Length: 288
Image (cartoon, rainbow, N blue to C red; front, side):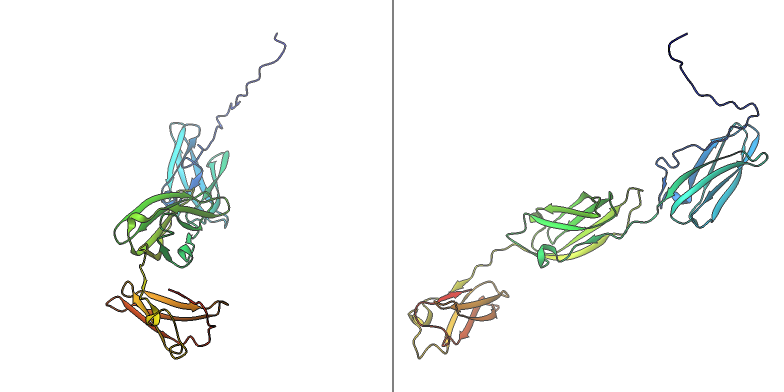
């Protein structure tokens, strides 16, 4: 005899009462939206016997079917669409002697609402300084995958797959130079760990990566000197891109400021008439 005993467990079943359910159900013991209408269940039972298979949800609503186990196995496909999401109990009972087996499975047929944080880039406008590193963020179901598509007026990016963290947030930083300037849209579609895919959600934003060139016509007041007779009506003008809105500011040595906003006309010209009488004498600065 060896110094230690080797133990191997066997099932003693003189009356043929073996009854079982094959697991995992639906590969991962999670039944998703697509799978719920045709859940495949199977197991073993003594040949020639019949079993009642029942699936019950948390509200005690059940779906059941009686099945023959002619060759020592039983199998059935059930539609459990009417059962609530959550933990389900799957049980199989011999219709004659009451022998039984049971197991638990999860039904998960919905995706927690996905979100995209706005405004994108702080103001929903992606500038030239931001376009190569735009951060997109949002929320979703932990451990889900988010498929991101970004579409602009002259190109698109995606799908970009981003994982949702355990805290329920996702983030991705992208160079969107190739989508071009103008109106753009980001679309997020979530697939959770159960395999459910949610409805896509989208958010618009605008891309303006062009560097706007602004010119100020000089000298101001003919000689860059504003006299007492000129100070109440100083014309500052110049050129830029048609339709651009700009702010013209004039400051003095003690940082007092006079400002005016204007829009460049269709010919690319802009002009403001400022009263600078409240500013101190000496050197001043004009900013656009």
